[in-house]
Image 1: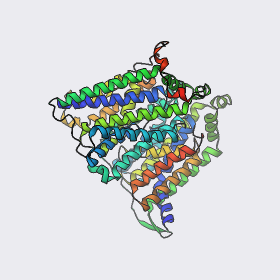
Image 2: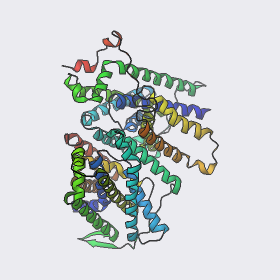
Image 3: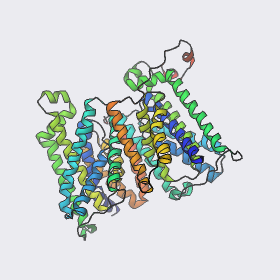
Image 4: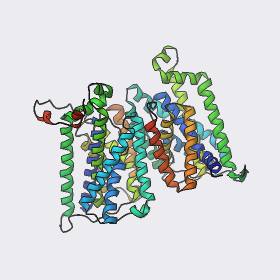
Length: 311
Length: 283
């Protein structure tokens, strides 16, 4: 039972990450292949602050996420106006830098020996696992609601315009570079928050957690579910992580000698699914949802960065 | 003296990287997307070498040739089965990369399911240490280096001085015009994917014999290969060779001065810096 709750909590983190990636790639067209790097800064930032400096957990998460957003903003300044392939390679490199620094800076991170332990919060509650899961559900739900709202907001429309034709959007007087940087920094900061929230789930942090496989798992889930659909992330994570990691690995009657091959089989299936979906249904299982009909009031009042940046 | 050491070690260590970068850049140039599944061409090259060298007992230097050719065949098969249909469907460049990640997963974990996740070792030819200009190296490293230079020379000649190279450059720059001029895009693409596959396979064989053969070996070098290729500029084979050599020497130099892991970080930071200031030449 405890293990199931742990898996479900982890699944919510994945959903959150995929949802943020939906905003970055599905809406703004930024191919961020450094998801694990930003998540990892949140994770290890929280861990280091909590274990080495005794900062309270909540504050540690906030500080680590702000740091993560600041680094993302810096990175955005450097590479976001380059081509998609350059952004992809640079973010991948960024994640590799984070993973390497976690191994080299032993004094802070414990290196390969690991960093621990981060006490589970809500210590005096009996059902604290379930309460934490509930908190995660609320937070990820809020994230999904916010990203649905973003899509219908002015900033959201500017982002979609940038994705489809950046020159055109710029020629209409939108400060496309600033919009992209802002949304990139915010979403990466939120990836950091999710990383910070993962820290008490794992309690003991090892550099292995920062392997690029997390990035690819999230990407596969998003592409599978539908990168342009607000529910694509949820469906994608259910089909990949939910189906394989929770249902198959926990409940399928697999003999022990084959069980070690199961993770490899899972990743093999991910690959097959991904190839199939891009070949036969490139918009994902759900396709692309049309933006909601514009209401005249409502979103009109929101003055956002794209609006103020316009000259 | 430190500089000379770094250049020497860097060249020796970079020889598989040079081959990988050349193969990778050919596909990037021709089809305009980064083929991450190229990592698996490298890995499979090493596993084909295991098949010929360890299982069938061929001498290492003899096993290089069939392994290389089989990698080329595999590369063509992947192109014909997956990438060509996808390109014909009009899948965009970023989606193509994601597709290639899928292909990469499929091949890598398919391989693990068949041969198992253990690390394997090639039967090395007799190793002897030699002195070259006062620096030590093994005969194997020197042979690898020589082969890399021969391969690089052949590729140069092929791309810049033969009909096939001209057709490839024509297709990459303006597909419609090239086809109107009577170039068969199908035949040219198959040839290029085959050559790229051979280069990748050979890269895998040499990185395998220098260390060990693991299912992740291709994956471990693909990031550096990608960055080298991007920094070099789309489809510039000359640039790819230069960037791979510079990356190798830089890594060797920083490794001599500090820790190896810092070399990796410095290299990646340098790449991000180059990407930032290189302007728009990266397609």
